[in-house]
Amino acid sequence: MIHLYYFAGLKETAGKAEESLPWEAGTAADVLQWAKNTYPAFDFSAVQMAVNEEYVLETEPIKPGDHIAFIPPVSGG
Image 1 (cartoon, rainbow, N blue to C red):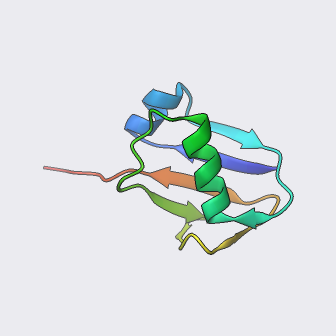
Image 2 (cartoon, rainbow, N blue to C red):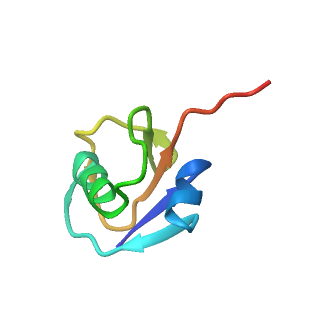
């Protein structure tokens, strides 16, 4: 099981802030592809992924128990 977290507009599009997903093995790219297939309305053009609170590349291995956050661009004023 892995734990996914959505922020800002992604949370609104998904209709939830978090969910868990059965998982055995794969990479951040595999999780990203799952998200793209599951939530086609997400705009992933500039989304960053963090695994266990650290930004990662798509080649990062994902293992059961990991916490994955999808973080869209943030602007402030």
